[in-house]
Image (tube, rainbow, N blue to C red; front, side):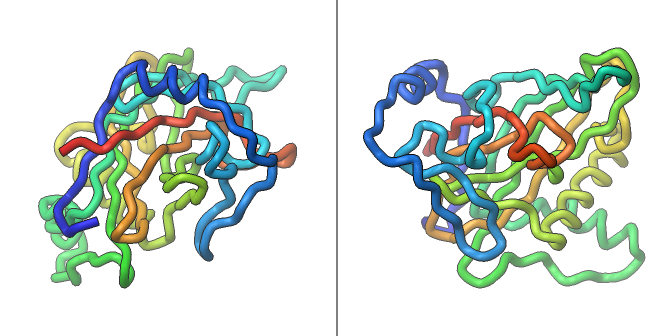
Length: 231
């Protein structure tokens, strides 16, 4: 991919229907991505991008909200969120206003963030609403991967720091996100920062309906958000 940024927007139900009706004769074997990634289902599967064995609760597009129920038990009230992946932007430097705010907060100049060699930043912007019955906390970095076909990329520690900078920047603008805690009926932005190969375009975003990508029982269920490039 060129250095020109690429963005991904909603592309309606047509692709979702194609995905749901796609047939494959491939085996159930799964593959592992490069070091620093987490396993995802085989590319030939319509579930490519979801962790092996995970229940896919839906395949929304960008801009289409979906509901997460987190932490349901027999004794505790579950947290409930309405989540929308609003944008996935790749190939650009991190937002300079966010970077400047982060430097100002520590009172000293800091190096401009740069991705690893041969990689590009991808910023996943989400809108999260608390549709439950009590205050709740949620953070994308714990439960989201950005996928290129069957390879799933999670946040590195450095990427998580950059996502924190985005949250702090928008908090300073009066837009508290779910990582700060949301009361019922409140909403706010959240962000995930990922690094993928510079020549690749992401295909899906996986959002687990849990407090982590996996539990003791295996992969958590979740939503496989479909991406499509636009010029």
